[in-house]
Amino acid sequence: MNPFTRNRRESVAAWGEAKLITVIRRWLGDVSPRAPFGIGDDCAVLRPSRGRQLITVDPVIYGRHFDDRVPPRAVAEKLLKRNLSDIAAMGGRPVAAVLALTLDARVNRRWLEKFYRGLAASARRFRVTIAGGDIAQADGVLAASLTLLGEAAGPRVLTRTGARMGDWIFVTGMLGGSLHSGHHFRFTPRLAEGRWLARQRAVRALMDVSDGLAKDLHALTPRGAAPALDASALPRRAGADVRAALTDGEDYELVFALARSADQAAFLRRWRRAFPRTPLTCIGRFAAKGKFPADALNLADCRGYEHLR
Image (cartoon, rainbow, N blue to C red; front, side):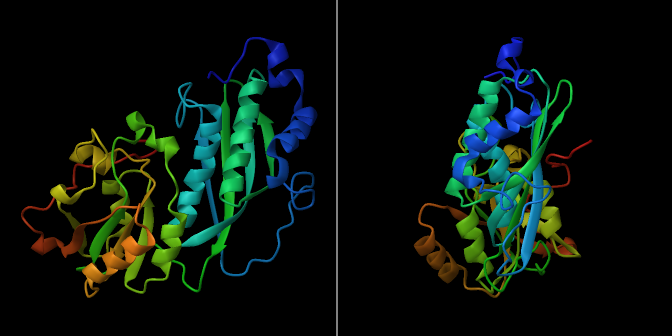
């Protein structure tokens, strides 16, 4: 569905900002509480966090993250879920979000209603409060930027640092082909899996795969090491080759380092009991650059997605 209309009576311009905000409250329903805990004040009031707080922000932009082929409900779901994936990558739980909407006055009200109702449904599913936001006009633009607040689910928050030489590299799910398969908006953020991993002492570092495994792994790699990956072990989505699995991006899976001293078989048994429907694959290990296995993948020419390049 194209988000723009030439008929002014169908556009947000026919309402103006004040009425649009009133209607957005109705579209969101119970996921946006009464002010000051929801839309209506200069700031929203949040209840005290039970643990360390987490915060992340990601946008969706028309022509970059979605086009007319992606339904407006799915656009909203993608916006929330790609932020949820960041919370999952720290082993946390989501709490509340604020949404900054930038739009052309020609945006179709029906498109926007479906977007917000999709956001409400997704927020309800993942128990996220939509606490507020902002609306701004910009000619030719349709973009939404969501800031998500979360909290640690336990005493431990996993980060990208902590992996050591020799540690094993694991990844959840499947990789590659996210665009043509529709996975880039149909995925499920690995929130439960991230919380489980944060409780495992043998897991040393964790992140989500959003810009492509080859690029994202650099942030996980300890100094003096390189990721030695086994091409045959890469879990690939149907139709995806090795390069696609390494560079396509928008997989929103979790990649982590497991201590080299850990009992892999026992770890995998515990995982399968907890998540029988989520594949988990060991794809390699962190090796010293001077002792790189001859049959390991060379990631030097695999860039992944990089903004502004």
